[in-house]
Length: 408
Image (cartoon, rainbow, N blue to C red; front, side):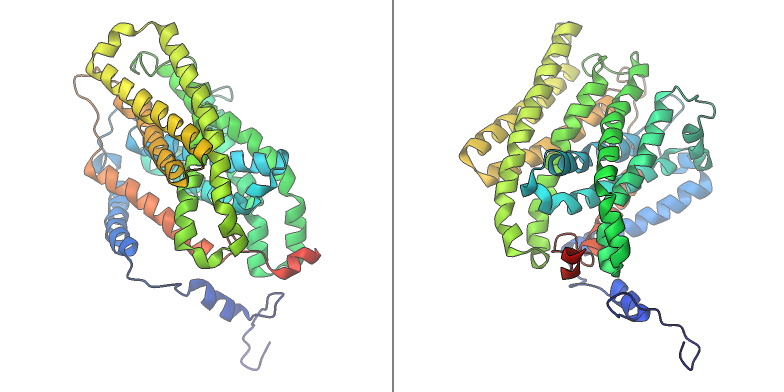
């Protein structure tokens, strides 16, 4: 305590807390960038709409009804977003369980991306609930029962977010300079990874299991008893495609954060991920063919929805799968990135086909998201990107950890 009775705490490296906080909030890089100029106006409008939603109710901004209570905020923010977060459990499984060390450099950024996705997309549930304060009901089993799928998914989400936070916590300890905490948290990483992988494989399929109860409401071309398995398999190549897409952008945007060694290893990492994507997409496509043959819905192919189904299967599953196979054999990095991008679009289309487009497809009045729902969805996405960028610029996520970590 100094003469002015002001307490100035210090971290382990001797940086005063006030200076530390000032560094934390200081802007990194130019502010007037194309992304900032596009995202800021949308976020301002989105925040306004969110206030209106909570003041006047969900009907003031959304086109949801009693017949279609789950729309864009569930279909895209939750169901699709969680699929793209699947890269976290796949990469941690490859590194910590299969001991594939060449992917170790992307573990932290992948876990961070997955954690933020769960926080924001699962948090979007509060927007979708007519009475947001009832979000606790699925967790405690009230009015649902502990044997319901929703109860299991809710607990899986909650526990998996905690597990990913533990997996990422060593980076936070390194940033703050807490050496003892870093040692303890580092020792908990493997247990958190195993726990997280178990939870993630369950709730990825659990999201699909939620729609098993809607057999009469989902178009026959997208409904089958194998939806949980298809959701789980697709989360593997969806998550890895996001890793390829996000990693390719990070290599350029955050180039100063990445060591030359990791820069050179980037192409080799993408090459390995393309092989996994190709194999899992083959399994997924094979299972889709089996479910189609088993369902005997041949006559539905010669309908508008049938044409859309073929577009999804051929254009957004078979085509990127072939691109992944070819790019792996030829080591064509551009084709790997292109295949990943097409795959991501295909995953979005598939999830929306199950949850929105093919849901109550035969109703007299079909659900269409309002422009306000779309703006709020973009707001959630942009806020996540802003926070992701803030963390990358400050914490040792892409750059190497402090030198003192080697001595722990």
